[in-house]
Length: 139
Image 1 (cartoon, helix red, strand yellow):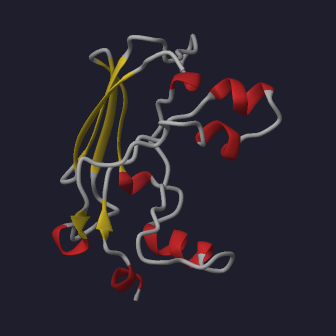
Image 2 (cartoon, helix red, strand yellow):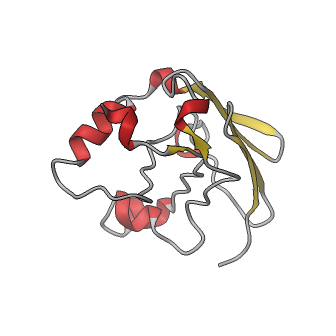
Image 3 (spheres, helix red, strand yellow):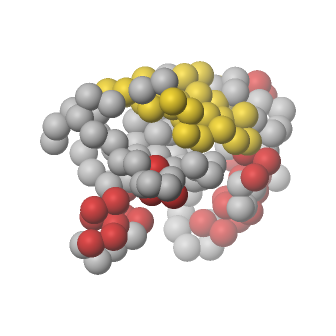
């Protein structure tokens, strides 16, 4: 049933402002809502082109070093569960984008912790959905 309401899949760079999350009284909304955060693309791949959204490889590199290397198999909740849950609390409309999370390996989880800095270049790829490149600039 849920597949009928999904137009397709795309790459979203789930950027987080950790200072806002950890030191300014708020986890998700403040840390994920800054201008330029959450770039989407390079394109939308229709659902018929992705037979199993729970079986795609995903990676993130910063300055050529791989920090995240995983699969959508390890998502805490699959697409169907996410849609079912969200629809209990809000209306879902054509064009809505739902970011589903990120694989292990975020900078805050490294030892020592690693945070993005001006000049860093991110490369984010998701099997069948394309690759994004972003360069960190001063805000």
